[in-house]
Image: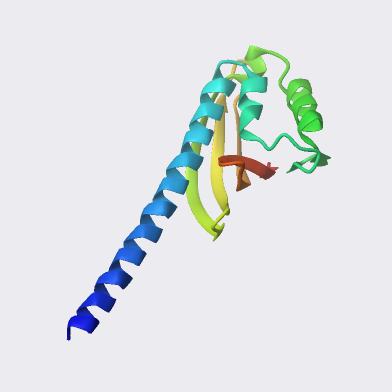
Length: 143
């Protein structure tokens, strides 16, 4: 009976630990998204880009096709959103965050930008990966 009790205790402890880890991961990902939202709304696209993996392997897929690499993605954002009137104020609605593996999640959501040149709304799917202890977007599909 004591062995059964010990086994149940260990299983419950392990299950609690994994849920806590997943919750911490999701909170960390939400922190990245919050920092991006704040940077965007201050028209600071370079700070916004800190949430992305600074690599030539970063992928962005939007209405104009695939953009590869951090520098190219930054250039794309700067060209599409050249002034504060274009960046406006960003808000998100996160619909789902799902674990892919211990080191990766995908995020499904909606974005809303209130701006002088006309509001913009759309949907996105982001793939986050833990890189060097930090959560970074490695792929972004937005439209």
